[in-house]
Length: 127
Image 1 (spheres, rainbow, N blue to C red):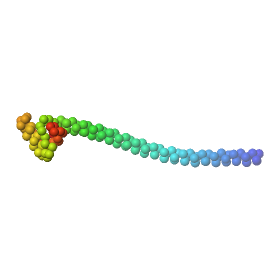
Image 2 (image 1 turned 45 degrees about the vertical axis):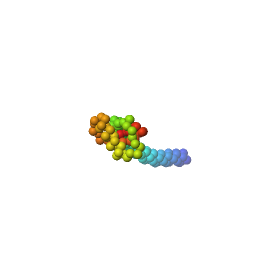
Image 3 (image 1 turned 90 degrees about the vertical axis):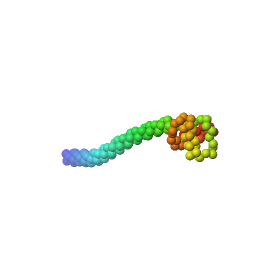
């Protein structure tokens, strides 16, 4: 029996050591899991911030697009194309503006303030 007791004690010691090792591994896994959860929470926060920034950027882009469309519409609305008046290719910007102001004043009897004039052809002018 002495041998059986010794063999039983060895088995018991082996089981106790295995349990200690398992307990240590469990502590390591628990710590690793804690670190992974913290990292996961940080990533979720970064994702949320990035998502909000993305939404804001998309909203701002949509507003900018609308502004561009409105500006283009307003620019077209304020344009006048005159056809039929012979335009000298050598005239300066100021001379063209004066000529167009006088033409509109004489023909339409309206006083205007032309800011820019662009020649489109021999008989076409864009203001």
